[in-house]
Image (cartoon, rainbow, N blue to C red; front, side, top):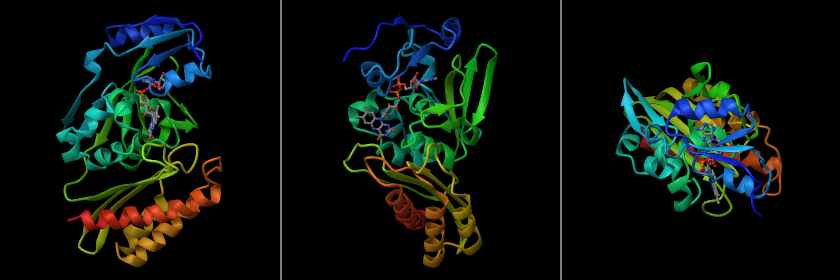
Length: 287
Ligand SMILES: Cc1cc2nc3c(=O)[nH]c(=O)nc-3n(C[C@H](O)[C@H](O)[C@H](O)COP(=O)(O)OP(=O)(O)OC[C@H]3O[C@@H](n4cnc5c(N)ncnc54)[C@H](O)[C@@H]3O)c2cc1C
């Protein structure tokens, strides 16, 4: 299928892009890597009056650290993130999660901003943003605002970004030195979207767990932060019994939908299994 007709604009600056979004009054779509939007256009599931192609806004692609926060420009390609030494050093969970995103050609075009704005419930980046308590910066006609991960994702493929807002930056607190982490995922074939994914980070102090972070991909319309499972680890430590108890609680905390790929029960079961696996690997890594 071919997409329906649309106007095409390729602004050179963020201000221009925002003005164009405003001009179309919600009937324009931002074109980033195109890896999700173009299939939607071709299947005519999305019929915007205009595409605002932000690929020429070079200042939107960067990775930098400032005061313990790693900032990634919205147009930073997933492939750049995969091989960024700064990301590997300060956000190794993001590096590991990126390897699960589609295939090489998809990661070469796909962007972090596009993935988060698209808000696919099975995508890896929203789960990492949620686990690490990150935030995004959006720019619209009324200026800039930040939205925390917990308030950004509304439901399937829907965020609380306004139609005339451009996501310009993703901010993630640098992970503590010596923390343990793991991104575990089950997909039918390599490169497929996750049936379930689990993002995990722990900070240990001897046998104690001072911080635990767990978030899901694929276990509901938006990423689920598994706070009660985290609380078990922070109370009982990181031994096998605590990990099994946290994993069992994780499975109880989600109410996934069933679809052609997996039933709700199977997704819930996987949530427990992958939480245990992610925690075991995270503990092995933690110093
Ligand atoms: C075969 C295949 C397999 C894939 N597998 C995975 C996978 O395993 N995991 C995964 O996470 N993803 C997967 N993807 C999707 C891929 O990661 C996309 O790159 C990503 O979802 C969208 O990023 P994009 O830059 O291509 O955005 P686009 O497709 O250009 O845009 C996606 C949506 O976000 C909006 N948008 C984009 N940028 C902005 C912005 N800066 N501000 C506001 N709105 C914006 C667009 O208007 C559009 O609605 C797969 C894609 C394909 C084709």
